Image 1 (spheres, rainbow, N blue to C red):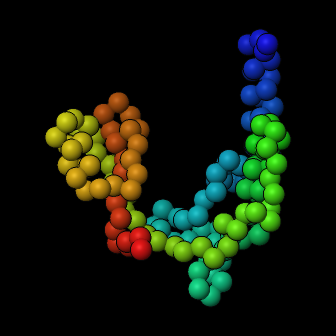
Image 2 (tube, rainbow, N blue to C red; image 1 turned 45 degrees about the horizontal axis):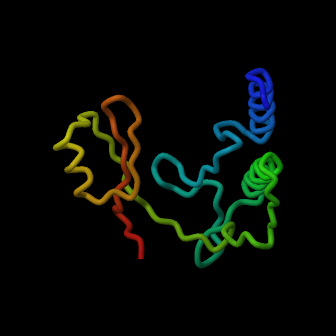
Length: 134
């Protein structure tokens, strides 16, 4: 059985290891793939699509291995084909600070790809525009 102190030490060690993977403007548990204007970031064109830059792939693989080590799960790179032949799509991020029934229903009617309540009365959501998924 873990004590509160044990849990705090485990969390502290996890955050230190995660932060060791971090670089300026990129936390170690995230992979940034676009800039604020939607331009590709940490991606290189490979003719028909994109692949991760080697240094970005290295950081995310370090994080996946970190999580695997903490959970008893083994990362097998040869079974991960998701780092290459990526397609890029541009979507629109919206937000609304009128989180009430009718406003929420209007957002849902737009069929957002994702949504998150980010504050007590604010919601952020992603619309499939200007690009559309196949």
